[in-house]
Length: 198
Ligand SMILES: Cc1cc2nc3c(=O)[nH]c(=O)nc-3n(C[C@H](O)[C@H](O)[C@H](O)COP(=O)(O)O)c2cc1C
Image (spheres, rainbow, N blue to C red):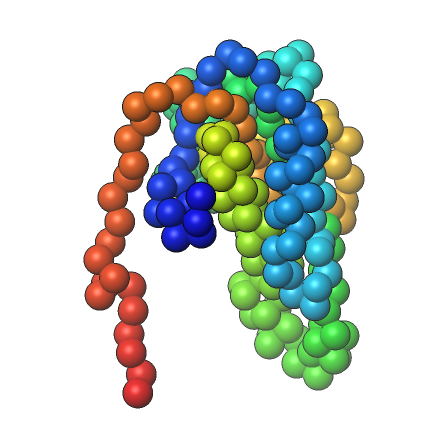
C-alpha cells in the first residue's frame, strides 16, 4: 500500500474478528512506528502490549464502574469495546525535558507553562507515534482505534498495569482483524482547515 492510499483508507475499527493476532506482527508494527518524529528525538513513549483477557475485562469493568459513578449512566459503547480486540496497546508518555525547559522555567514561568502544558511537545511526540502505529497496522491489514474515552478510569488502569508517575497513560489502541463493512467518516473540505499567508 502506498502512503497516500494508507492515509486515505485508514479508519477507526471498533469490531474485530475473534482470530488472534501474532505478537511478532505487533512488535513489527511498533518497531516500524518508532521512526516517528519526537521533540528533541526524545522518543518519550512506551507501550504495554496486552493480550491477557482477564486484565482487559478488568480494565473494561473499571471503565464501566467509574463512568457509572461519575455520570449515573452506563458507559457508551465507544468507551468500552476495547476488550473485544485480541490485542490492546496501552501507550504511555514518558517525561520529555527539552533544552528550553530549564531556561524558560527560570526566565519566564508563564511562557514555560504555555509551552510545556498547552503546546505540550511531549504529548505531541507520543501522538505522532500513535498515528504511525495506526497507519502501519492498517498497512498490515489490521484495524485499530485510538482511544482516550476509557481513560476516565486512568488512575485505576494505570495501577492495574503498574504505570507509575511521572509516566502517563495517554491512550488505548485495540487492534485486530477488522470485521468487514465498517464505514469511513466524513471530512471537512480543505478550504475549511487552511489559511494561506503569502
Ligand atoms: C485523541 C483521540 C481520542 C479518541 N478516542 C476515542 C474513543 O475513546 N473511542 C472511540 O471509539 N474512538 C476514539 N477516537 C477515534 C475517533 O472517533 C475517530 O478517529 C474519528 O471519529 C474519525 O474517524 P476515523 O478514525 O475512522 O477516520 C479517538 C481519536 C483520537 C485522535
